[in-house]
Image 1 (cartoon, rainbow, N blue to C red):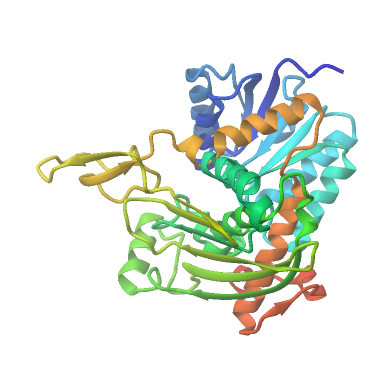
Image 2 (image 1 turned 180 degrees about the vertical axis):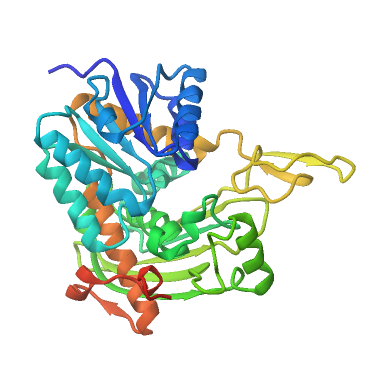
Length: 413
């Protein structure tokens, strides 16, 4: 069976991350952004207009999710709405597909897959019961540096010295864009949920041999620390309250803005490997900073997103408007500034979407599936439990199935 000539994509969500995907899709062939649904008319209309402006449409702004899912012009769905709507959106997809009202080839979901292991397993069950191909949108696995670096290490380093044994991943910036990200109940936690989902999965990917099943590495233990370093200080509590019109109250319900975690895993040969991850909403630098390392017996790989080849200098005499035109989460408008000339490519969105489009067009299983999204949530819940109890969590831990981090509970933090 030949691949479908053009994959028509419908977006659930029209916010920051959906727009990042839109930017990256300019570098992807054989697809069209055919529709978008989000509850706010002005935002979905603006998203559709931007898709058309970029030559990715024509894109229809749908007033209801069911109307978009049932449209004959939609072949696959990118789920990019808020975390607390994930299960609701997948139940809608499942119900309409099972009823024969929607005809979809696949569904791809943004990170993190869910707010708890129970939610994550339900999302995977609903998707598989509907008979849909599925992908987990973890962009850092498809970062140009990660793809190239992993290839070199496993092709040149591992055959002569053995497999890598330590992966370090850090991601830090000055805080999220949307108010719901700051809310533990809606987001599922704080920075550990929001950003460590990237770090643990890209590290697990780097430690896994090409072509090896991702679950070949068996989880052994998890240990974590979380903290509120910046945003619970009175001046910053007031700033958040003002920024989001009183929706975010960190004096009463804060979510962690710093997290550090260590995961121990075991290779198929019984050797230990380690993931070290650090994430923060309390980093103030040029902008978003991603740092990755992979270490083995006779080799090392490292990457930092702010170590750019392109830099510009703007003197203090130049006063410009605030923006993020040089790097995501940009914190200054003058000085010596690193510039990411292709953020969508460096962060992995372009190769990620190219891979998902081709997998759905051809009916092949993506490299990263919702099953990997479930595995990520299991790691995150173990790290949260460790931080709450002050003890190392050992796998398997049946208690993780119903565990909800304190910060995400109605009575938390």
